Length: 390
Image 1 (cartoon, helix red, strand yellow):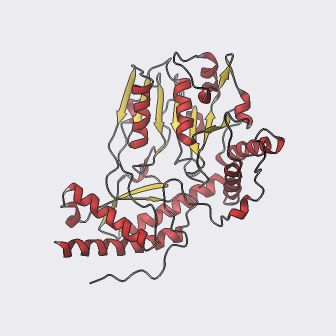
Image 2: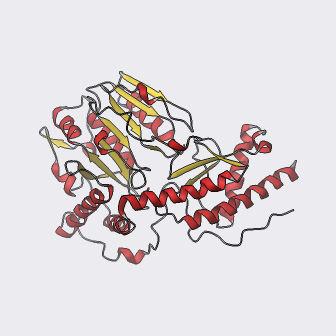
Image 3: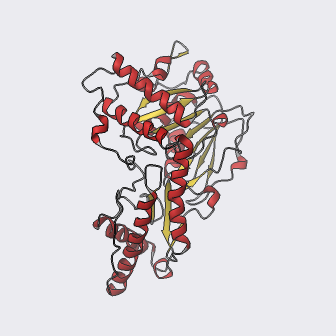
């Protein structure tokens, strides 16, 4: 018997974990004042880039003595700039519990070929033992594991009197989770994550300690021009007032400005966090009454409020071989997408099969609620098809 389809669909069925949903009310006309056809080095271009930096500082509540720069190649470019420019003089502790964190470990060990590296790892849905972090080492970690739905609960595990630097990939945490700036020396993120901006641009935020490292340490390896942040042993200050290393898209800049202004109107950081929390609560309430699904992160203290990862736990499905379970999850997601009720819901390719639903601040709680009904419908349909095939 075919299950009845839900009566309504999400108004905005975009639940991708990047690029993420545009802010509520977004329209291309919002970008009509973009400095198109103008040099980014002209007064108008520099002013808009500087404004993007200033609004970032205001919304994220970044300390006044931290530098904020717009850099190439999204969050990946920002992280790579930090790794290649700062690592080397101290031992390194890497902390990874999902795909992107593992990627930074690979770069540190296999590309930079650093030898004195301690790797703290955990499986999907869990965190490593953070008490094992050596405060004398440089620390590289993601604040929020985008592909596992697991975040650090706070920065209490980072020593206030640390001697090393903390390098934090915060791309799916910024604008949705409270970052402890006093414990962070390098923070990176991209425009296309939590604020739903356009892709290809990254943000690099440096503490005074990170700047001191840059000015007092020269890496032993060749440094590509696109990574260079110093000249003659001094920080290139222009990078941090909008004089970008390469040519940015002024259309993307305008879109980021639009998102930042919306963020201010939504209550700033406090309002953004509240929106993300409310979206995640919709899924938590649904999961509590839905026997076939559970969170990948069982511990609520470390559960993400942006990239929410879930798994199918129905006994009839978990009894299947791993390949068949993965196929079931893909068919469930495909059924929802076919009905235009929710796009890009599948788990990341390296993660356990299941769902990954973006719940950041640009998503509306009523759309998450509508999605859950379609997920129930798709589960029933997919399970019925499986039984019929058997």
